[in-house]
Length: 536
Image (cartoon, rainbow, N blue to C red; front, side, top):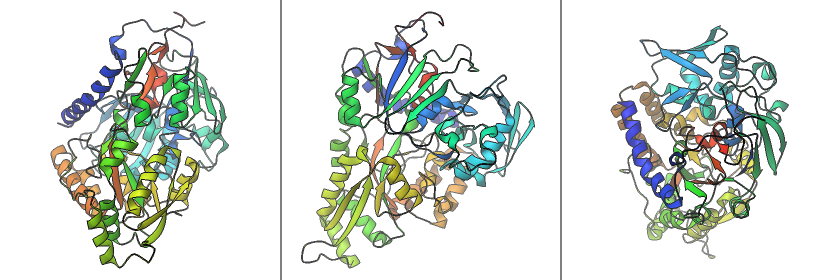
């Protein structure tokens, strides 16, 4: 039942993917050629910050860390688990014990052998304490044991439907115990010179410029990787588009809507969402509900009416992403509903509600002044938000920052009024979605509950949904949650979608083969068309 629903969701999603793929040329899978060896792939991406995937869910970091580290499993395009560090697993009859047999002969990049002790340490001391999403599993996992070198066992406190979907590199990257034990994982200098088990080894990192990775010749998956080197260049979308146009970049990771569309129908270039199914997201405007006036739900609702999400989607995202109609992405079809309180653009209604709150206009037309923190990737959206809120007397001061600075302001220091984040939701609402709202996830860690929202009824519904194994019943609970969250408006959902990436298919092939989060794992199977038939 669960896998069938996943396949239905993926089938609906693929309609979107095929439109983009067909418009940009033949898909990779249609090209039949023998993979070659060698070459360097240059990627336009973001500046990642610390390269420790067990303490962040940053979409800027994981395209890099996903090439360096592995999880126990990997999710295929239908969000079903496939082997990675774990080559097989079994589940007990009561659904509470998961036993994983680990791949043999795996070594860390420094030559030390990998074992179940690394898995046990990583979950107990890092992931369950510091990862923005995975820390919520602390309420689920009773214990982790390592009965032998190549076996690790998870015992759960109760049956938990989405457990396996948590165990990929994105949420469950395994760290080397011998380099982290006894240190603070947040400040360990290894975070800037990472040592993993993955297909590529770290060579160098120049903050604000580039990260260079080289092939791991001892990778435990035979014959992989095929490329010699990956170079990640830190670029904003406009700069990346220019570099891609000039042939300086081969893979354009995070194009804006307009920049993605400019490359459609270009010979030798693919624009597609395939391989990014696990990146479906809702982009919310985050309100600090622990500060006045945002602690008044009427103010939050008025702001929602003031924002024209149709216009924001059409102009800032070129229609590639759609206006959000619910707090949850529409791509999780079995749980999604748009039958929630809607906030169609209505400045008259927004003004009336604000008048009711007592936040009346002053002689200069201003009701109150606030500020929005953001980075350059959100610049167009920020300008639109500023303009639209000004129409109802809310003056927004825009505070442009580098990504690491606004992440710290919002999630660590809690020193902000308005902010934003690209929150990815698949493969299950419990994995990517609930972290935004749980009371217990209002912590000093990136990409957690930034708004400060806390509602015990919401927490109880999230818990109830995870304990229910019947997917239809789970879906009903998540629809109830969407209705409650749409009414409380701790964040204002702006747009909903995936967003494509762009690569040069005349030079590089092998994309489309690494699951639903391929943007974190593409290096393993991509190859260069001008390479050699054998290793040199």
